[in-house]
Image 1: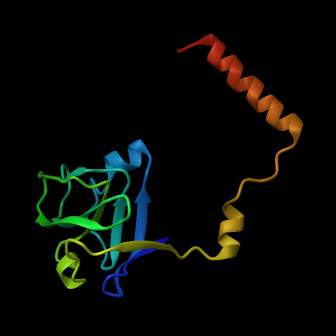
Image 2: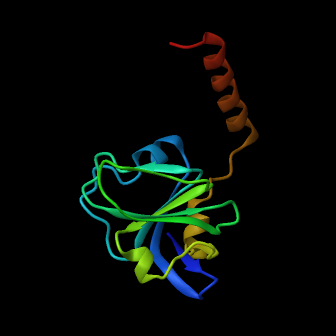
Image 3: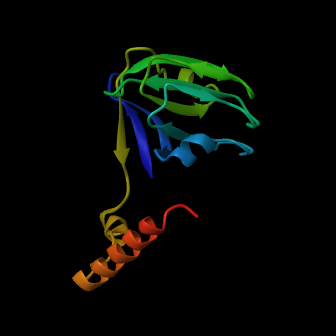
Length: 149
């Protein structure tokens, strides 16, 4: 997991941050969750807007530019609402967390990865032989030649 630090104020914004970059992880976001634990957050990249459809709790949203500078803070966004900005990404926090961490427009945030080195090595792909890679590419090109199912 990662954590978010406010380098402008030298404070911790969130201790347990998940990052959503794929289409489906960004789309799902926090939908259908019952709650967010204290110190938990979701960073959605890229995202200039968020929705709270099918959410069960209000959230704070800090919209960030490409340099992770806060361009807008939307506080206490209730379920089934939309929040928009001119930002590049959105940091979703528990309602009240933005004020508690004193996150305001202009602050610069950073994402710090806390994954221990041994866990990173465990997540790296195993070495693949040239024969295995060739077989994989052949299967992939064959499925492309067949076209959509």
